[in-house]
Length: 118
Image (cartoon, rainbow, N blue to C red):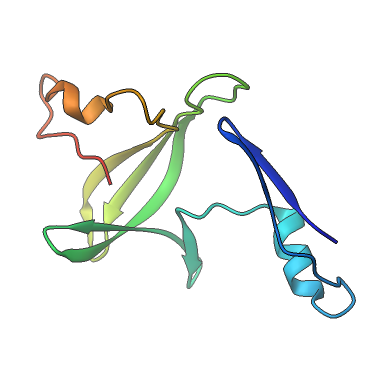
């Protein structure tokens, strides 16, 4: 089997593999894969690099998801830093066109402490 994935920039193919020899890879692929998150101890984690160190954010729930064919496919998550559940955060995850400036470069929104791109 060879698995193909398509996004807004084009297609990407996996190496060929035998589902009889590596069935777990096939199941993992068929159920979906999000490279920005992982699950550990029942919690969905997002790792970011900031100021030279890795920080782990735990997502609590999806706040908003834009399902679309054309657009940024934005998902907003309610989250918190690992060990700091009393400090809620919002993560805005979206497709970024390489030829356009990111929203974080547009400035800081009113009432927010800052926007970062990771």
